[in-house]
Length: 227
Image (cartoon, rainbow, N blue to C red; front, side):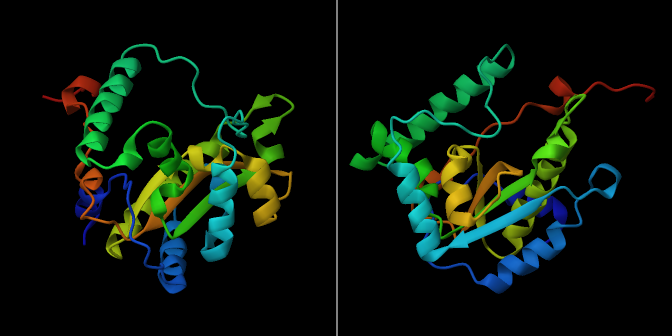
């Protein structure tokens, strides 16, 4: 599989089969993913990879926190100015239609929301974190470690396609960092950036037929100096 095919295949998976992901496959993915670029080769990323009883305990703890305010180490956006709002609303509308198309009770209201906290049934998760002191410096917030973590996350998700695995990058997976710190023994000196649910997609589930839209190239790219 070449890189173009991997990019075209990658999508957010929202229903996984329960089949376990071999540790060997995850190790191979991680070994290559670590070739991601970073500011001055600082390689600011660290990872906790969970499966089995440990992951079930995490998702159960997250599910039990329904109604409890999320306290992620990195807050999500509070406002969506245009054109971002229109894209977000379009995604929400289309996703709602895809969820209803499944036609079963667990997509309604809170139950569907809880699927995110349960990592959509993924049998494994990769949690990415970085140094607190590298992000929060005396001169202000240093965004580059988080940016670099995003690049290694993309590598992981692209490489997963080679093994027939699907992924979904989730801010929701790190909404309660206190749970993750306790269960994964992540020290307070680290800030938790993102969770990636990973496993074998359940292609029989109609939700996985959903694919988000992308803007046309010429609506987001400006060209200079070309004939």
